[in-house]
Length: 389
Image (cartoon, rainbow, N blue to C red; front, side, top):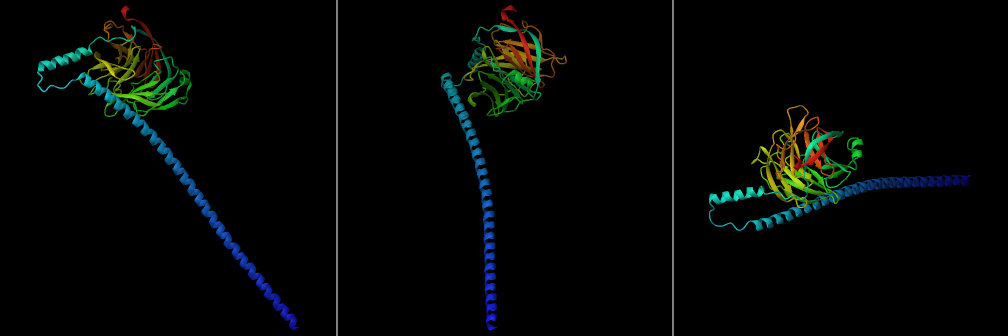
């Protein structure tokens, strides 16, 4: 009987030890599971932080790349401006000798002013044998209505290029390029175009595309002409227009402080100043260097002027008449004095919608690309020789 009791006691003791071992193991397993769960949470948090850090680094690298590109563009522009200033200083040094240390009398000053005026009136030496002038406007073709009430559209004036360029607005920095006129006409808005972003905003509507370069007017503290290479996406030259006290060239398009034009002879600038505030002035520019070759004060008034263009070194200014929806060529200025206002034919534009904010002549097609209250219009021109008038 005593032996049975001892066996029972031993069995109970062994069972208690076994249960204690199981409880211990369970506690250890729970502790391990807690540590694994903690490790998993920490690992997940670390991975999330690493992803956020990676995104921040990528964003900062992209921002640095943009800043680097902008800095490179600014440095190129500064280099171009420095080169141009050096050329202008060299030119001034060759033209102007040392100032004498004596008083200059009024008569000598008047002689110098007269010489400057005579130099501006010297005969313009033509680069081509172009002698055409407008005899009539044959037809009007409305291609589309896209963009705001003011803008400019054109093709490359130097070659038979099919690309169409849209300058929407008067203070933007992105050009819409269409591969063909057909793409432009069938596009919903600008959907079929490619965006071309310029390094600075343009001012007004007086810009041209010539020989794969964009020539546009920019106004900050001064009015500048910028030459932008669409092949390399960079500014190749820029020039501050050497005239002070500018005023808008057209009274009906006050946003246009200067209007650039291209004809058979090259690049022209149409502008106005306070010194000759009632009339429009004209300058011939070097298409490569942007230097001013010659300047003229015309007799064409600014009042009621909408837009202007140049054909065969002759300036044509378009005015808003008192008749609703009618514009006409009302002033002609030929730098070679072959045509006068009395000789020029009376030419009206077909009925339009509002007011021409730009008229761009294409010498390859002998057509005008017009922007009229958001409508893009083509005018076909009939030409004749100046000697026939």
